[in-house]
Image (cartoon, rainbow, N blue to C red; front, side, top):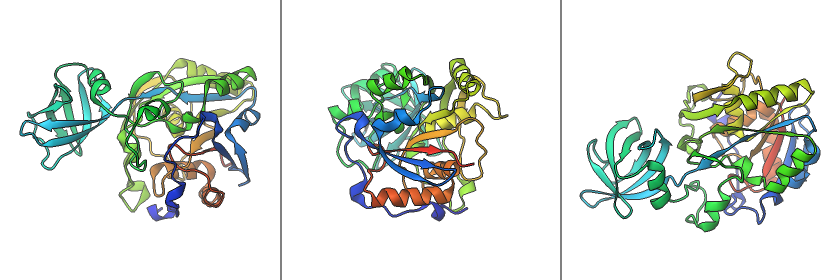
Length: 341
């Protein structure tokens, strides 16, 4: 497989720059991967597509203010993008500067916070925050890390809307965007009709924005991301299966966490790091249905949905979405995909 096999033309005006006025007012494209059938819906139609014994698995990660400005001792400006928190005082970060800082040097953050550069690890730098916990300094001095295809600087609205309503565990540098469509009322409707709601955590890393740089798909390597699948999720999935229900992953991150927790075919509670790369030919063991947004051309996430629904089905669905003027990417519309046979 070649990366060019996962390309498509997208007019710039279809890249959503703002979220819908209300979370659940986006559109929903329903794709049946078994038949290839497409149905144009609204996100408010989701409850009629979810059965009373289904389980929806949500990613409860919370986006941190991962982008911040800093200065070197020489006065030179530096931009930090924290890729992953490693503990209370350490993090891995991308650094943009005219001259990259050396290990042992210090950076000044905001009004006086400091970070020491410990080492360089491939394209990332390991930092130690000297004056406060990393999460506290980012909250004080950082900005919401909007994706690079969103042109406006982050504002107060983004701080609220680029976060799911069920976000609980800080650590992500990008939102699990399929969850942005849910409001409390939608979750209540689904629960009232008998659907189970279960939550796991996968802290989305900066690698979600990284292009696939190798021409050969199988040669691509994902950045590692921390995840936690608790026993409550395993129990909810088991109960849904026993009742004849389906497992609905809300977002590609929930899917990757679930499939990472079932390497032998059986889902189990576990926590750790995953670099699972899903592309056509992958054998899905847990997830039956995927709720997701529309993904960038030539991206690993587009390869994931092609694996789930079938590459030909995804090509037709995306061409249909372009013709019907769906809104794409993080603040865009949603798809519900039935897994291909």
